[in-house]
Image (cartoon, rainbow, N blue to C red; front, top):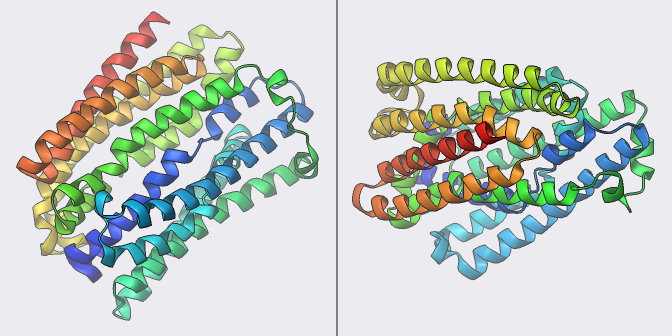
Length: 392
């Protein structure tokens, strides 16, 4: 709906605003839900668990505030070098106002540890309905770029706050909200040895992945133009919608794997990982086939003929997405085993390969170069994690 209202050029500018703030968020965000779930699954008392939750909340708040400051400073200091023109800098700076609200690590950890996946789903559905309603209103009243920037900002803030409120409601239901707010965090590493190491390693891993998954649109915009970035972004959003399934799989599977590994239930651990990998492999193959057969009419219906050129981009992007989806299980398993170092190494090598491929191909073949770079990255990432999993 947004793409139809704005067209490729203005949609490309909006995509760059969204991608820039998402990239900064991922670069500084500790994704605290990963260490909170791993060490929370090992916690033996409610007192230490509330301290762990408060530690995660403080980490999230500090990261969100820091991200906002860094994002604004980079726009004004290095905007043109990042592909952000002087005309776009005001809109990008405005969009950075969503960053202080992006506090999701601790809330997601609470809901996942207590098995409240339905609450997470309800929150996501509510956020989607809210966003769709705003976009429909903007489309009906002929909203332009500035109006849709505000609409996307409101949708992002609503989605973030809904998860926070749901997690606080769950903590209150568990009788832990008041104790969490009063809980001390000093000496937290004495209760959970290796907490900082795990948090920093997973954050570095996420930062490296984000330099490919978030900065790719900026690279296309910088090495090509905003219209190419718009085509690439719409292709990426459609082709990688399946990765939301990967997020849900990781949300459900990771706590169970962490508990199984902590309880030394090795056979159950490997069985769960193998079954989920087989399921996602079959789903990924079906997905790529379906995208190949239906993408042209889907683009015509969903975003209009102006985006027809995105068809081949979506197909290639879906291949990379299917490979990444398959790898989420192995990644979750390695993190549950405490092998975050091997995950980090695999991401580092794969990301270097991505940037080398993207920088070489985008100037020659445009947005397709970024898609091919994602496939190169996925192949290397999968291979290195598979080797690490077999050696553990």
